[in-house]
Length: 394
Image (tube, rainbow, N blue to C red; front, side):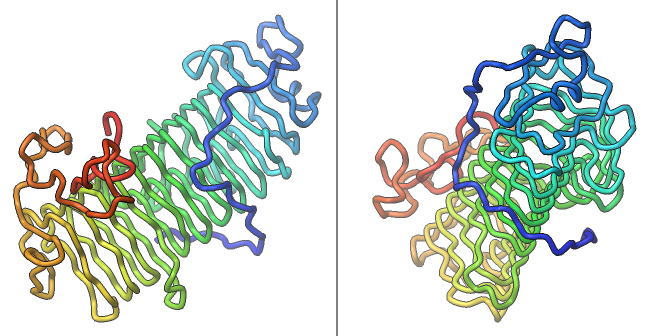
């Protein structure tokens, strides 16, 4: 487990669940051009001269500087996108800093962040008691125990890719301690670290994303709440709650868990629905878990629940290709809608977990109207059934 310096700071309020980035930014107030064709030649100069709410258009260039918003709640908007607009910290420290109480309207749109190294926290981005949105951003070529670190901040990631960073031993590509995360279309890997994402003592929504760490932990919620939906996760997924917080939950719905490491949940409660799980779902001291309409594959058993886990009653699951349905010897198939049949994925070897024509998982899931597939038919078992099926290639 990562050791973090815990500071007695208050968390910012979380964004509303399902909130999405505002992509229609207002007209720019000023233009930055490193060749001298704009109002400023550096990003730092433009930020220093800005007022809250300003939008700064940034022309293509490699800007060799650290960007510190310094309390200015402004949007930096690259006109040509991340391939041509680069912020390179040159090894001087974090590439971007938002630690001056920046609020709504603070954003980076269309940049590559590179050359950042961790000084205290965060190689590519350090956020403290502030809000920031990253949209269409590539994070690459940075080095540290946390490539992005947010402490008591609200951070939104929309279409952000982490690739080619160096996460030092035991570290995490993304770390949030307190505060809130709202991520969509995120593509992140652990890049040599122990974790792709760590979220502690806060909240996190992850939607329509790819989170990977084939040799470690893809996602770790510690004393945190949230939702993971329509997401592909490679590596172990861990949810650790406090033993007296029975209602704390991380909801996992319409996800694909690959790699065979499975899911581990300790204390609190759990909701796992309409997903494909390669590996074992382990429950330790979990209160009233909900396990519905999933396909389980390749675990030593589908579900391993200890004596402290209460009211476990999985329903409408396909318990296929597992050594045992339950590690304690319980057989679930044949009761409560559970069964054990080949799900007939379209191309499992290629990672395509859609259901082929004739699959026994079609119209075999939850019978409630509220859980119907988007075409109005009964819920299909697996990640492509139910209210929020995976769309596109994950």
